[in-house]
Image (cartoon, rainbow, N blue to C red; front, side):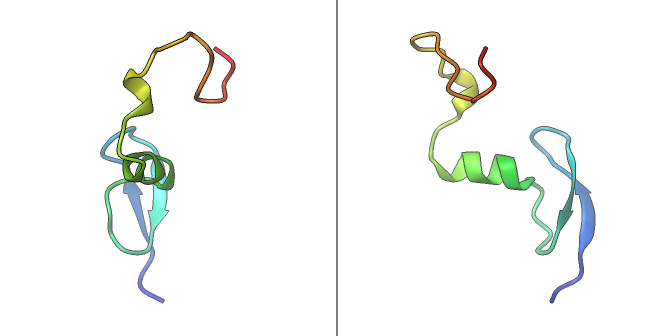
Length: 53
C-alpha cells in the first residue's frame, strides 16, 4: 500500500484521500474518464446529474 495523502481536488476543490497522488477526487476522475464533462451538457432539462434539478 502506497502512502495515503490528503489532497485537494484541482477541479472541484473537495478534500479527499489519495493513494497515488493524483489531483482529482474520485468523482471528478470518474467524470473525466467518460470523455465528456457533464457540467456543460444542459440538453433536455432533466437532471442528468441525479440531483433532480
